[in-house]
Amino acid sequence: MASIKKRGKKYLVRWRDPDGSERGRTAPDYESARRLRREIEGTVALGHRWEPRDAHVVPALLEVSGGELVGGVFFDFLELVRAQLAPGTVRHYERALRRFYLHLSMLHPRSRRHTLELLSTEALMAWFAELRAQDLAISTARLYLTAVKAAWDWAYDSEAYRAVTPRPPRRLGRLPAPASAPAQAPTWAQMDAAIAAARGLARAARTPQHQQAWAWRARLATLLRFTGLRVDSQLMQLRWEDFDLGGGVLVVRGELGKSRRERGGRLLPLSPHLITELSAWGGRRGFVVAPGKLDRHSDPRQMGQIWRASGVPERIWGVGPGRRKGNVHHAFRKGLKTGLARLGVAPDVRDYLVGHHRGIDERYVDLLEAAREAVDQIPPLREGASPGPVEPTRGEAVDSSA
View 1 (cartoon, rainbow, N blue to C red):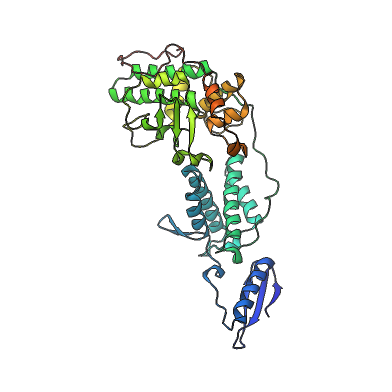
View 2 (tube, helix red, strand yellow):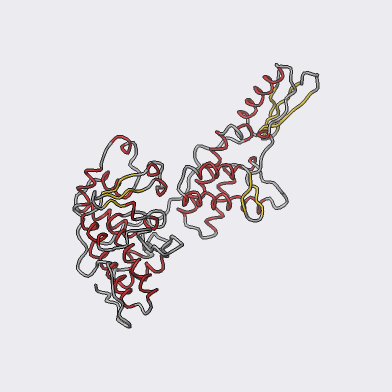
């Protein structure tokens, strides 16, 4: 029989092999020691000498070579979530885990390997204090802690690491709440003003290249105004074959989804006014927005320039109270959802349209027809805001009041 004895903060498991030799091995907590004892007793009962599997050698949290992640617990966690979560979420997890590993490296400069044994509530809270001292926003610091906690929980529940993983805390204690400010969203008219400003910038462009650049941003703003989809992960990835203009729907491919439910793909009904706009754009092949652009990304600086030219107050789309960065793309998403609320559209239908998580109702309630009725209420673009074909006029000033 094996025995367990506490040694400081750890637990020592002692036993005799079939040949009578005494052996021992430490575990980080009592539950891990019990699991280790059961495994050892089972092996010895069969007349075999117990040898530790790789899982019982306390593994490194991360192994980095040439700046690339090549192994470790965090690496395995990232490989798992890479197939389950949206690319942007995976990048957030990787950024947080790298940053936490760097924090441990600074705390233990003489150690070549930082292992699972270093995970503790105290270590996470100390890291949170360091992030705040670096002037990181409270909301971002909390998200970073959540990412490390998710990797810790996974390791504790996994077959490979549970024997050597300390028990994670249920909660991380009292963390300061981020400052909040009342939501401010643009109206339909203000969103139209931004689209008209982009069109004006295209007309005033001095080269065909600049004209095309502002023209596709006007189209992007139009799609944002009517659909509220996410920018880089969804709208910039849409292809013409995703649209069924005759049926009045957009097929949002699963690969463009953020939540687990979205990654199953979904149908998004289209406003009749958006269908009219899309029908006038021409070129029904390839990407809908900026078909010649290799980097499927919309720079917020240019969208900020469009908002500034529109004359819409900066507090609505820029950096305002309670925010650390601009709201240039997300303002359209907020504007759509707020506009639908003012039209009396039910909350679950609004969530369905913009892809927000709606809990268990997502699996049981079919909202497609209700969503179609909702988008039918979206007002058309006001005159002068259509992002259709524009002819540049050299030196023409942008009409900020449009």
